Image 1: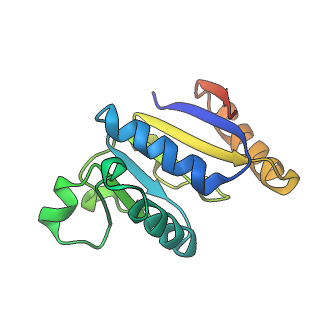
Image 2: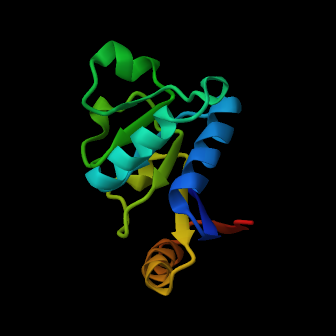
Length: 142
């Protein structure tokens, strides 16, 4: 069963996501990042602006198949059709809604900002997972 983790109170979600992806990459985890295309563009730029020693290989889901299969981090605005994804280990959901197809992943990470509106939307996602019996854990962002 898919494990769900909520990372709570991220003051700067973009910086936190970069740190989270750096940690995932260093532990050799494969991550699909799902979110709105404008947010994914910001994340892409942020990942490219890390120092050369912190570089995190990543691509967008529309990359060439050989690039997609070699990338541990894949950015996408849709996972409804999972056939194109090279891995289903971790899903980092940056959407405000539940990611359709999340149950195909071993683990889902939901990053929640410190704004009340973000917390309210996260509560709805929490309720969705909880009502379906998924194990949920939390991680307080420091």
